[in-house]
Length: 361
Image (cartoon, rainbow, N blue to C red; front, side):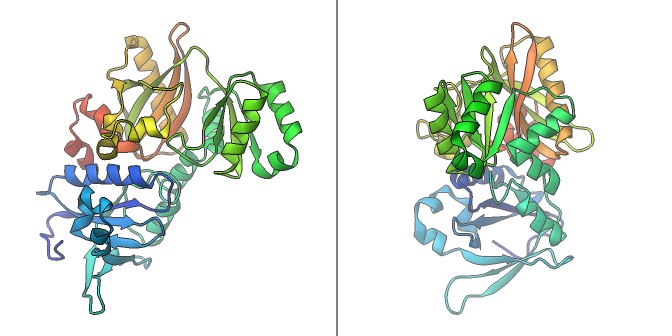
């Protein structure tokens, strides 16, 4: 990695990893991004945050093999991002007692951290504090997009349809389990999905078809978050996803229909199934592109996806996951992902925008 790169190039810091339960898939997304940048235009600086929160940089971090060999990680340079406005500098110190110090002036940061400590507004807040431009949703859009309960409230306020739901604090569930179950059963119908409010990639999500299953699902979700969401299942609906790109004038991609091995896509389905997922991320998941739905329904999904993007004040690129009942034409928004796996590049490739051009935008 050279600190004397041609300054006609834009220097991009790609941040990934972090103390998130989605750490591994963040690595996959980041490496896809790093290797897709046009090096005639960009000087790319990998910035890896370890599971215990250490910041590292170095050329070895751009290779997938490095994450299978801890010695290669150990050879990377420790890095610090200065919070002083106007500095816009990543300061790196190479390993060893007499390690040399280098400074990388960053023009822009490209966050590739999925989940907590990255997709939830925390990383964006640090970058705002340091006055470093960055790609994607801001602090508000990231935080709202990460919190499923606040997200659904934003959708409802914008008139965007969602499934029926209730939410509870973990403390209330632990103190009044019988009352919580009674409230759920009086307001919602089985089957139900129970989710932690602030995790992505289907982590901690369970389906409940009866009271016993509901109790177990609430216990699972409570292990991951202090706020719990209970949703009615959209029976008879299929999952249709659409990516949205832009800022003030966002545009929608073609739609996809994910093909799940279960009744909903688990973390393993999305990223780890069959081995290839560990290197290809969301590209390796089974899907139908374009989604096998009518043109009218496709346009409706795209319009609602753009509305959802605006409702949470998103920017850059996102993926909106919808539930569609083909018989009635009903479209319900499930959630928005403000840093989608693999940056949803496969949807934009199918829309005529290759990954390098997507990164340019």
